[in-house]
Length: 160
Image (cartoon, rainbow, N blue to C red):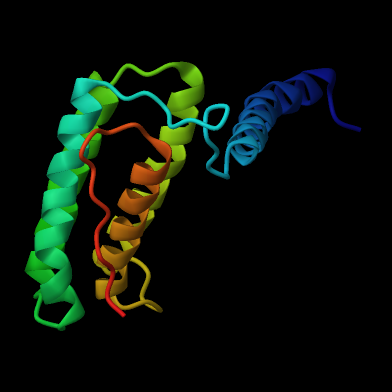
């Protein structure tokens, strides 16, 4: 039979793991609540200057990169630069954008989709072509324009 000290040690060591697992499940559940984009009572969500500036920059990067990616003319180094440029803008958004919590939750969906596209463009999803990552980011930007109030926003024409 194990000593009481052994049992207490085993419980003490297991508690942090249980807490971490519980937190991970809670976060996963919370994320699942906000997985579908929706309008704000039928209207687009408000934006702020830092968000609009960063999204304009991301849009410019995507619009200039997409034709070359679609034509198969980007090098791995160019795909990496694409991802780095967009990641820098996402970092800027995280550090400077101040939206209402509901709008922020919707923006998280867009940012998650953009980051998924960056992963594909970086070659982190070997079953998908890197060019598809650029298309995914473009699709995410088009969704942003559909759900967020960004004056003069123009959708990116996607390749056929």
